[in-house]
Image (tube, rainbow, N blue to C red; front, side):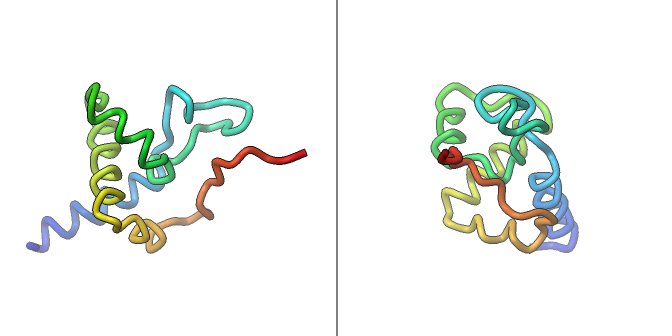
Length: 94
């Protein structure tokens, strides 16, 4: 991996932890006021986009990037750049 490729990889990691899902099931809602960080989206949810297509632009690029890392079993790499704890997607029990 060249130095430029490594910089791009690190940038994508940081952006995937900062950028939040702007729509859909994991977009802004009472449970997730700002949306879920892209890096915390479930693998199964991302896999659905492989069939119907990822969104255009940087959002789609990041979702595809995260999907590939999770597919490869390398999602722990997000812990290196994560500034907040992983977003829990489990429903709170009363």
